[in-house]
Image (tube, rainbow over all chains, first blue to last red):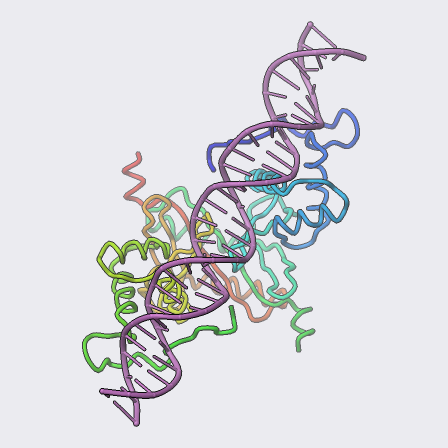
Length: 150
Length: 150
DNA sequence: TCTGACATTGACAACCATTATCTATCAGAG
DNA sequence: CTCTGATAGATAATGGTTGTCAATGTCAGA
């Protein structure tokens, strides 16, 4: 996974010589476009299905490949749901952040957590851990779903 | 997942009428025993392999089943590694807590995080989320491994 | 504009952890 | 001891993800 087996077109997103080509290929553009429209988190398979629905002819393999690259570039967020499936979402904000996801409708909110960052760093430093990274996910039921259920 | 499909032997761990039988069967006892000895997190498959290595004849299915039940009972912690595999570890402390795991040797430290709990609750309350739960995992390289590498 | 080299695609099969199924077996009560 | 429901576990699915590799597309330079 670390050996960047693919690592394609790393040469910046050029302004496109013709058309609105963003990253070289039609497929990549379509994928990015769909990602921008879908709210909340979706699995690679769902994204692939959506692509097909829109008439775009893109292979599942390609979807996986792009999502992987995009998530390495931090252009999309990747989280795992409770069944272990990987879900992707286009990042709204650029930097490091976390998510609060609704268990019912799947929509998610990006949350900042300076407090958490500090805490994590503190804990790690105290134990002498280095090269530290962390994941934080909050799950709950959003106001909308909560009132709908009640 | 919520429909407690299995949910066996819910009738408390009786003091055992004969032997040190903890939960009725040899297999369950062996599993718990191994869990107690293994440090850090291990996959169900690893635990199963260890069981076999010790000469215990336990089926892989059974290992999975027990780990599932134990984790529902919060008798073991379950986390997911980066490849999506589920790892289990016997809980040292009873209550809610998080882990800081070494990427290199797999050992983990249990950490308390009142700060995080408070933060998560605050964020959730602010957004109107209810029935909130959260996961926090810290990954890094422990002092031992760090100095070994250096 | 043409062309060749290299990157990308995608159908398909392989992987592999996990779960479902279904019968044989065991534990414990009476 | 015997009966009965719980448990075990071999085996077969499941299903998301990744590997393979030939076909195709892209773009730079001629």
